[in-house]
Length: 89
Image 1 (cartoon, helix red, strand yellow):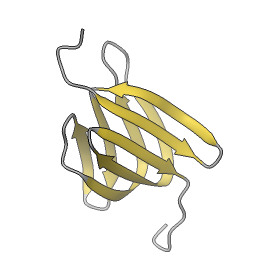
Image 2: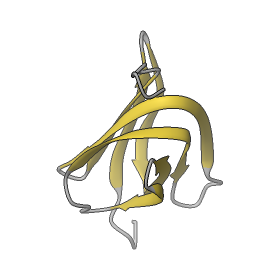
Image 3: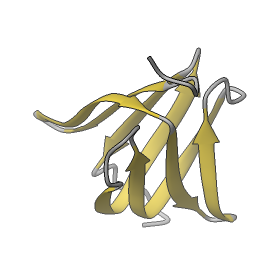
Image 4: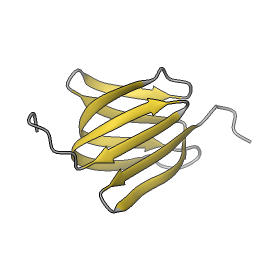
């Protein structure tokens, strides 16, 4: 049983699921800098860059490099879509 509440995390790119599971935290980078998402984080959407790190319970962190993506946090679920091209990319 987990001592810390967990997030549900799904990371996709067109036609492929990269990661689907639970995590203690998710770390990424936006134009404002590095940030962490923990369980029960406030809802938000942001453009992300550089990488995403998934911090799972009792496992080594999973680092996923990326160029651009979108992160959406809502109802203790983190959804990330990779490979989103924007004019800012």
